[in-house]
Length: 144
Image 1 (cartoon, rainbow, N blue to C red):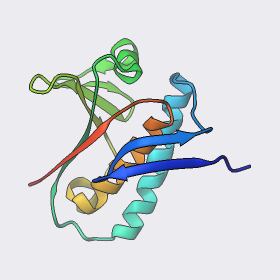
Image 2 (image 1 turned 45 degrees about the horizontal axis):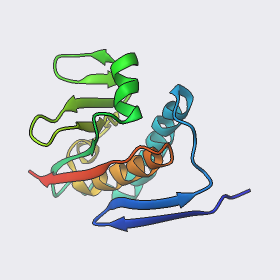
Image 3 (image 1 turned 90 degrees about the vertical axis):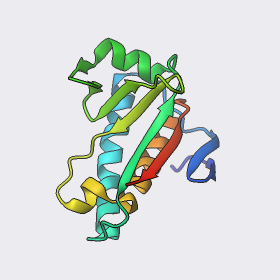
Image 4 (image 1 turned 180 degrees about the vertical axis):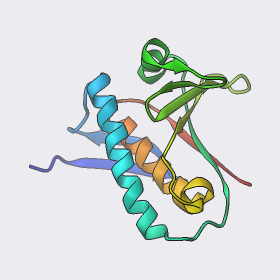
C-alpha cells in the first residue's frame, strides 16, 4: 500500500515534508537510504547519459547535533580527511558550523564522477531519503 507523501522543494532543497512514511533512525534505516540512493543513481545515470558538462561539486549540510552525525561519529571510520560510514562521508564545516555530508557513488564513467547533471539529482534523492529519517539537510552545489 502506498503511503501519502508531500514534499516541498525550493531551489532543489527539501524545505518541508509531511508523510506517514517516516522511519526511525537506526543502522538498518541508514543502510536502506544508502541502498535506495545507489539504486536511484543507476536510473539517473541512464537518463543523463554521457552528458558530463557542466562539471562541479555537490554536498549536503547538516547540523552537528543531527542523528546522522552522531551515528557516523560513533560507527564511522576516519580516513585522511573524512569520517566515513559505507557510502556516506562527513566533514566538519569550520566556516558555517555543522557538517558537510557527501554521498560516495561508485562512479563508472566521467559523467558520474564530474557532471552536475548527474550529481544534483542524485543528491536530491539522497536528501529526500534522509528527510524520511527526520534528518534535515540543505543542498549546496558549485560549478567547476
